[in-house]
Length: 174
Ligand SMILES: CC(C)(COP(=O)(O)OP(=O)(O)OC[C@H]1O[C@@H](n2cnc3c(N)ncnc32)[C@H](O)[C@@H]1OP(=O)(O)O)[C@@H](O)C(=O)NCCC(=O)NCCS
Image 1: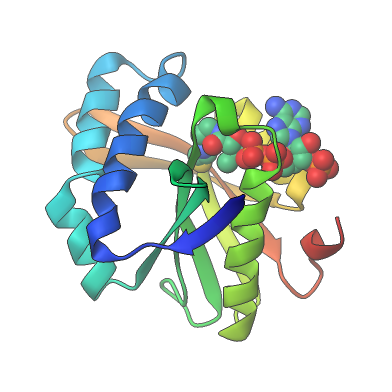
Image 2: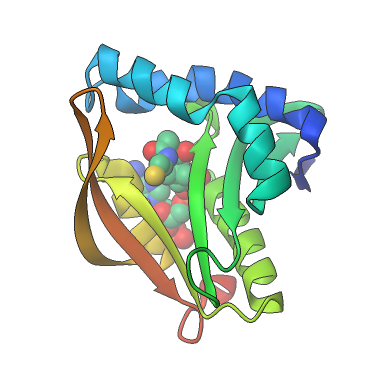
């Protein structure tokens, strides 16, 4: 049975294990090996994840089939602005992609965002991550702007910001 759980601190190790598999595969044709290594270290350091979990309001969801974890999603209510929910991370194992699980995770984010009176969900996606962009568009996200973010060490993130207006959204009906 597929279920989405809200992770506890102890589950953050599981998130790192999933990222170790999914991240290099997702970005092998988009980013250099050096940038992947640098970003993984920056984003999936256990101490940093624990800080986000306890002090920055990051909510970690894990989608599971039985006891096997298939992917995760991290979101933050009222991110930077009241009423705006940011999806910081959403990653599924390659064999779990394209089966409706991304939609299931985002649906869970929508339900919680609505409970918190959020009217908008947004995320950043790499400009060359075409598969994800297509999936987000199918779910009702729209491109709003482009951002080039300097992440240090000579690397940049070349991103599209996409958002879903929850007043108009009907992912629940899709
Ligand atoms: C991006 C991602 C989270 C999407 O989740 P998913 O489970 O694969 O997508 P779903 O099966 O829920 O599909 C959602 C919608 O997108 C469509 N879709 C998904 N992948 C698609 C593709 N490659 N081409 C065309 N449409 C696609 C589906 O048909 C569906 O639309 P529908 O409801 O109209 O049928 C997932 O593929 C993933 O983890 N990818 C690798 C990591 C990654 O790139 N993460 C994003 C970082 S920003």
